[in-house]
Structure formats: structure tokens, C-alpha cells
Length: 104
Image (cartoon, rainbow, N blue to C red):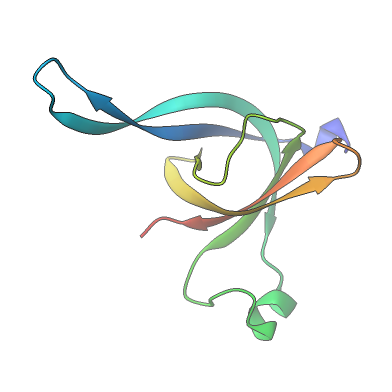
């Protein structure tokens, strides 16, 4: 993974459920990490093959390997929030490919 390709700044967040002193629960997002990423859009072949819904915004971010990213996390890029719908290890823990879909 070339450092020059990692030209986008993304924040990975995790949704937490908090309980106050009265037992009331509330949900909030907490930053996990901010990293440099490479932005790749879904290919036309993937859309035509039916692997991607044409009406949704599907993007792939490639980041350096991290073991603290989970499928239930979400990615914030340019003020837009994306759900992680798939992850793939690149090489032998060289990188991580995050397939994300824009939140409705």
C-alpha cells in the first residue's frame, strides 16, 4: 500500500449505549480513530453484476491494517456517515479494505 494513495482523511466511529444515574439509556457515537485512506468507488461491473444496489452510494476505503475496526462501526468522510457493510484484509495485515454504504 503506497502512502501517496492514502490521501483522504476518514474518522471511524462506534455507536455506544450510555446509561445515566436514573437508568435512562441514550445512544451516542464515539470516535475510534482518524486515519488516512484511499477512496475507491464501486466499479460499474459490480453495479451491473448486482453486487451493489445502483440507488445506494457504495464506496470502498483502503486503510492501513487495524485490529480495532468492527463491522458495526461507521465511517465519517466529508461530513457524510457510511455504514461498514464488508471488510477484507489486504495482504498479510498490510491493509484493510472497508466496503461502506451511505446511511439513509
